[in-house]
Length: 344
Image (cartoon, rainbow, N blue to C red; front, top):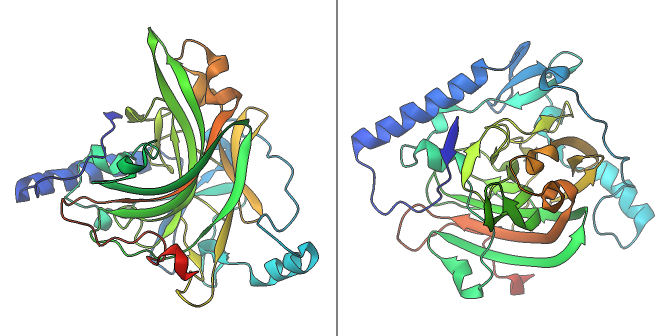
């Protein structure tokens, strides 16, 4: 399936018939997607998430990851002490928690969309789409339906690493979201057949509270090959909503939850993230393992000059927070903890 991307706000509440149609269309999409998988086992986890287990080779030839970086993959003032503390106090993802169930050896997890979470306020196009990067002008970063707080650097690179705080950010509506993320970016990518036009390509990873996607705050990945203009298999999309992501790890996957979460004024959980171009693939490291990748070839298809795409490297790194609001009223959705940075 191919859809034109749209993440505009909802200026008027959809009527009952439209909401029902939105739910049916979106549910049918995800049912069809699940039916296309080579599922050898399905498990229901303690939190109710349903995971389908597929043979890793059913995704095609799977590449080998880069060497693991030294622990911990986060900021440290005392590497030895911090490394030992990290091993002891490491947060646990869903499939590492008591009572969780994995699939057979040689299989990898694919999260199934909970159809009960689908919001009638969103069309299928809106549910599958993701908004573009933060605007360059500061005044444009605080305008409905998107609010951003961002930092970035224009530099030729092969990846980035850092960490985000894992809060359960309050959201006003089920179709709203609040996220913290990084993006490796390639600007001015030539578009096939349009010599005077260009687009931006991205690989994005982060932490999000998006109840229409997953009931709890969770890890997400996203890729964009065409300036966010088309969401489709091998074109762009969230997690495994479309084809493109190759799952490598049997424990941590896009859509998974973790514990403990950050407590405002209390204990904190920072999620280390690394994105690295390695042997023709954009690999994603979470905590202490490479979990999967986006083939760089995704970004060199349907362009005039493959050498000027994200397949060859990035020219900009962004780290930012964003909230998306469906209603026109001033949002009550929080970014991160919802506290001002000055509070520490």
